[in-house]
Image (cartoon, rainbow, N blue to C red):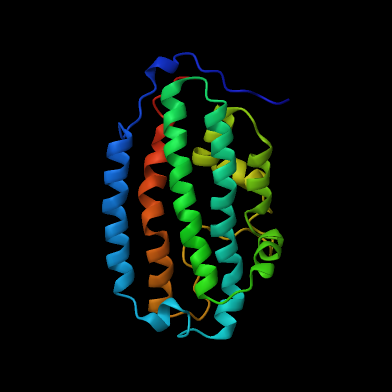
Length: 214
């Protein structure tokens, strides 16, 4: 039987970052400056994936797809969460996250483009067994704000329940880590640079639901 989460004390919810639009813009400007500095330290050949083997790119496509389509999905399900938010403070947090997801989406799209992977291959790679596709499509079907946020940010069980078992040869890869099939340190640095600004928000958004009493 399906269970729903009911908030008993929504007034206890506080944005842990205490964001305003001005604070958000300043934070992202600093984060982008750090990201660009790290990216500038990576040789152009590494950024264009010319220092890795064709086999590496073949095996990395599903990783790129997991990153890209998880962000694309988030721009939709977090927007749904914002539209249906039961109180304004939570709606504000969701809207800031939508802006973050759009920025990350553009960064992940750039990874595909720099690697020279045709766009027609992106979606099939994500829909293949063992990716995050099933989990995120489940999130896209939800409408309840709290259910979306809890499952998206703090429910490893939801991911396990909707994905193949760990013993399966098609078990899902970790989205946030750099897969290393015969890769080089520079290739991993490229992935880390692309993911760097995501880490800051991921840590912050995972704390967002904690002050809520259920």
